[in-house]
Length: 537
Image 1 (cartoon, helix red, strand yellow):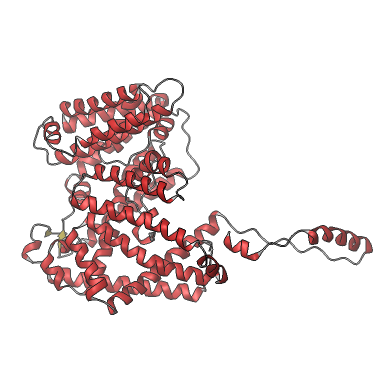
Image 2: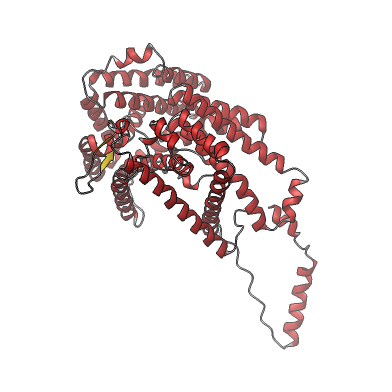
């Protein structure tokens, strides 16, 4: 059935009400656990004194968040503000050289923060992969890029390369691995795009401009070379109507979310609690399930804000960066699950789509997903948790295709055709409910720990059966229907239904009657559309 299948309004209102009550109920349990265990011994390292006017302790367990918006906030703001200032001056005076200015400022900023040896190491990888790209053999460029990426994930190569960076700067390790990892992915994109170029080769200067663009250098997101090259070298700089207003609005939204998350850290310790297994085993089923859900929501918020801040800066440079990730609250399909849309676009462009074709063949899809998650596992760093996460998500993606193929056969296709569109949507939402919790369980593996994921699954499916299982699944069903309703409304905006033809005017003259009859005769001769075919479409 189509995405535009509608349900009665009172049913949608009921689903929204149940969902809101469930969210407040779960948040209340987590707040109670956080308040009663704030002085727990295992919390001392990650729960510190917070804002004095709240009178509560604040969770500081997420190093990335604290680094960005607390500890090194001034350093990051200073570097990005300098980039914006110099890029604005260049855009006004010499827009044709702005990509060169981006590169020079990026090299100087990296040199200042990490030293000349780190810049030399990065340049050596760029030169190596550029030299291989001149051969224009696609598989060789890919193999060389993956081997180079593996040198930052395996000993003794990691220790040897890390020895090029000196100093006791606290962010040294984070910036080292972030800058080198994203450098390799950008060089691979450049090499693969150079293989596709028919006439000549891109110069190494274009690669350096692409790699040393400061907002993307350390933390991403990744923008493929073909898009960056076109946008960064465009000299005619114009803005759409209300574009600056939208950029300012996005910046204010990100600021509001940052403040909101910091306030939330004073009341709900959603990252510290999962690390204490003794405490987790004493929690209620509702607190445990809510904790798993809120962990995924927080990780999405963190990714959306961190990439959003960088994307706002790049939009000021007249670039069109990757969109923010899709919220976990709006996901119920493995095919749409990703927390970094830049990496997702990179993988789809160079691995998943070339190997998977139209993504309707079971064998091609299996090969494409295995290769895609193999590259992803190498990117994240092969370990037990990452390999389990990759296996389960790869299985989920393929299982969706197998299920779709199976239920498109007879007699299931005929059963669905005989249903109303609303009933078909309800049945699909039931199946998506189980899919949603598979996504949650598979992804908290990577975000938290294997023990936490096993405990949540055990409580949800075994110890909590049947009461907890049925109630949680019903609340998730309400969430799926709310998501589907939002998708339906968006589909009507993007592709509105055609308006019905206006009725023909009625007259009493014999001439008009004759013309109307003559026009109606060919229309009556046309075949009537089969309603079953319309449903299938």
